[in-house]
View 1 (cartoon, rainbow, N blue to C red):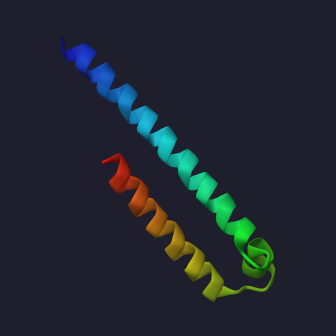
View 2: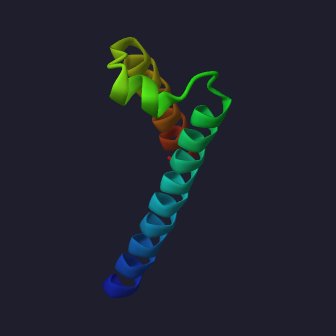
Length: 71
């Protein structure tokens, strides 16, 4: 009985983690596509720390939304 409950909880956790990672990757792709500038060029080449902070804040917000939806 314990093993069956553990396996079901483990599988559901894996499904939610996979779903969360897919949604997070999709949101990263979407942010880079709708951005008017090249995010990679601005952050890596031009050292635009303001853009990096904004992108990081967007990712934290998306992560909170995904975590709340899964929870």
